[in-house]
Amino acid sequence: MAAVGIQKDWLARADRRQTGTLLTMSSNTGVRRGIGLLLLLASGEVLAHTLVNHRYGFFRDELGTLGDALHLAWGYVSYPPLAPFVARIALELFGPSLVGLRLFAALAHGAAMVLAGLMARELGGGRRAEVVAALAVGIAPVAVATSSLYEYVSFDYLWWVLAAYSTIRLLRPGGERRPGPERWWLGIGLALGLGMMTRYTIAFFAAGLLGGLLLTPARRLLLSRWLWLGAALGLLLWLPNLWWQARHDFLSLEFLRSIHARDIRIGRTDGFWWKQAILGASLFTIPLCVAGLRFYFLKPEGRDFRALGWVFVLVLGLFAVARGRDYYMAPAYPILLVAGAVAAEQWSRVARGLTWAALAGGAALSAAFAMPLAPVNSAWWNIMDKNNGDMREEIGWPELVEAVAQVRDSLPAEERAQAVILAGNYGEAGAVDLLGPRFGLPRAISGINSYWLRGFGDPPPDTLVVIGLNRAALDRDFESCEVAGHIANRYGVRNEETLYHPDIFVCRRARLPWPELWARLKSFG
Image 1 (spheres, rainbow, N blue to C red):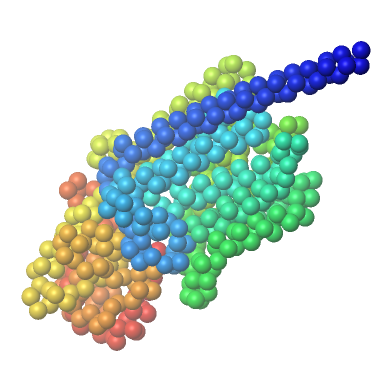
Image 2 (cartoon, helix red, strand yellow; image 1 turned 120 degrees about the vertical axis):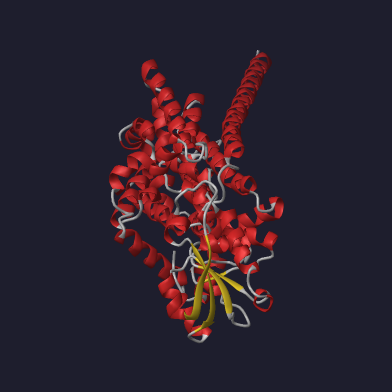
């Protein structure tokens, strides 16, 4: 009888093991299918951008970044080094290709969509929540706009989402199958380190996380040794840029103070609160944001993750107090969107249907105003141009460089070989650097941002072809200046180049020694 009992017990345990194995296999299959669907959605987003991103031309900021990419360093005046470094990879792989450059921004957005879906899963959501979260992040206006361009904001958005995902994994209750969630401090450290190498505003996430943990029982996680290991990892990643800043007397702080004062002076920081509804989450996903806040602060299933809800609230308050620009909050909104997607699974069928309709409407609106779809000078273009002035700044750069080359070629032979191109802004300088080689133009010099750090060359120039500076300033700085050409574009689009400084000058003989003149030309933009 004892032997029979032992045999029955063994068979029962074997049956439980087999059942557990089957459940685990089924679960793993579901996870793989879920990730596959998220990857499919992200691939669709990348493909959509790739198909249209060749239209118009390079944006002014893209040209500045490409100009810096030709001079790799551990730091730059206006941003950390990651975006120029990736731009250099794009140049090496694709040459001066608009699609090749912007592919990296689209890939960053696609990765953020996948992470958003995984965040919804970690918060307890099902397949529907994963898809809604990924799509909500996919149609976010700032994310769509920065996938249609190449800017450091594209990667900054991704690092914020990675930091939020790692925080969810840190906060999620552990168990037999999930020991050591504190190890996710390494993920947070990785995201913050990469963020500091991309854009310094991710420090606001770090401050919000510290405050969120202190305000909840999750404060116990601040005692983990993994916190210090994560902090060490983040510092190690940021250290090269920190070393560069120290060597250059933290010049970026002077730049940031100057730009912030300019933004306040000209009203770019006005309307911070009401613009959150447009640029932060888009009007179409406001219900998901509200549901996300309720999930963290009012729902029992969100109690373990309440610190992340506080991250959003505290970061919003910090940006408001610091008078940041409205879009600075954009990478924090996935925190709410993914939780809202989880909460939406409990909504009625009608409410869920309205959510899908809202996502479709948001996608259409973001595409219409943030992607290069409208024919130039069409009625659609004119409406878009009034709401998104960046598009007009993508027009006319090849014509500008060609006009500069024609002026250079018109110089006497003895001056032509030694002539230097002086540009007033980084877009003009970057355009000359990127597109000028086909005309045999030298790389530009400029007094703006990191161009100023690179100096005026040796020997100092005597004859200069000048773009982007006004006549009064040039007459002050040079003995002779004459208008030798004009800037236009084939579409007749009125943008910064054609409106504010359309003249191309030839200037000779500086009135001051070049080191003194160069100090005067220093500017931030």
